[in-house]
Image (tube, rainbow, N blue to C red; front, side, top):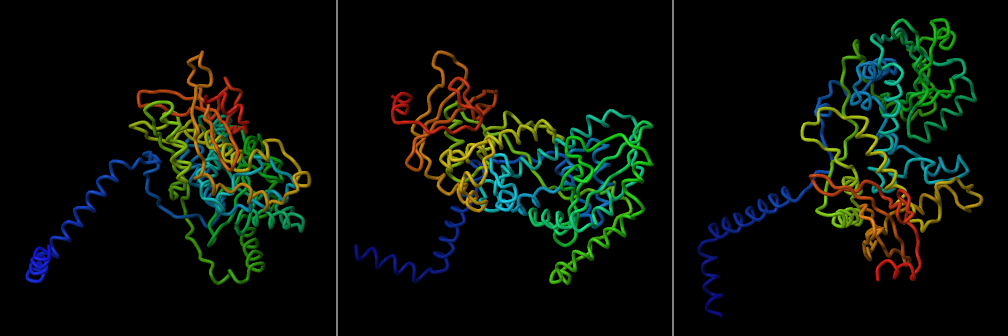
Amino acid sequence: MQKIMRSIKKILKQNPIIIGCFFILVLMGLLCLNRFWSSITNEESTVITKDLERENTIEAFEKPDELLVYELAALVHKDLDLCIRGCSVDEDWLGQDFAGIIDEAEEFSYTTTIPPANQYFEYQPISFSEIIEQHTMSYEYFQNILGHKKSVNVKAIGIVLPEEQNTAEYQLYSRKLCKTWGSNAVCEMVALVEADGTAYQVSFTVMQYGNGYWKVFRFGSSLLDTKGDDFITESTQEKFDEITGAAKVDTFITALEKKQDSDKEEAKSDKKKVKSYKHPEKQILSPNYSITASLYGESAVDTIGKFILALQRKDSQKAMCYGMTDSRTADMDSVTTELIEKQGTFSREMQLFYYELVTNNKFSETSESLLSLNKTGAGIASELSPENIPYLNVAGVVSADEEEDDNQYIAVYTFDGNIYMSGYTMCESENGWQIESLSAEAAGLSSGEVRKITDKKYHELLD
């Protein structure tokens, strides 16, 4: 043995460069093998459609009226992709003051607001999907009202009730809104649109973020009492003039920004100007969203196992891929409202699944006062932490109704010292199995429901 060691040392001493090159080649080979293995095992969790591949021509709009010209052009041309690009998405989930919203409402339910994604990254894909769906529903409303018109032209853009927006009461409201959603300023605006000879007013709430760029925060106007599903009404030039008054958009926004700078003097020196554009309707903003891909299992039980494994690994984006029911197609050109709605529906089911599990069924979809819950907004946010999800243990998966082959299953879990069950309705396609819904009607389990069960029920299901 000693002779062998001495021989190895002698070889190393006489040929250090050759030996070094050999080990480098071995290391490079291992790295290449690792990359190859990763490439064939890695499953993409998002889809890039052809319209999402369109390169942006600008980063942002400095002027909110230019943003609305762009947004209205996207709506008129039925371009959902460009429409979403003009709306706040990341700004919402990153900027949301979850605890503040709950405290302001003085009550809480699972649907009070989007999940606290800026506190727990597992909720990010869920909040992201719900925000995009909200904008898409407004897009659909526009198409339902004006999409069938032969000719739609933007005649004017103005400020909604400018004198009202300058009152102390509204300024207090706007400061609270900005604090809640992490923006610099908020402004309610309206466009006069002529469609086949009839005039309509289309209202928006826009927000300014970061270094001075604007996005559509919501379709609708609180001052006009319109929301995302009724922000278009028939109008006339006279009504539009009555709403907007004599205020010019540029003058009003300049005054608003000066007020903002006086409120935040320290941010004044950091503020950067963004270029103004002559033809905003011809611009393309940067993509700010993605489409969840479709992933499959070889069987219903295999898919359920992969879904739960993704949750355990804190990969909620991948978990969503098992519930998209064939959202990916080989030649997908454009994002569709159907895809966005499927993504939003499953994300809400996942939100409820998370909430019911991590809170031990403490809250519900029905609003309860903070007083009766003996909680604050911050306390509820803490209760929603998914940090223990990696310790979720699957005890078994069984058919929800053995007599009926309806692809409904019950999964039984042990978690935080308790036993739970939840439902899965599965569907099979030529690509494999996916989750149609996190429910099992045969067992009385609604969408996203996670129910605490007894030891007796546990044994009834699994024995």
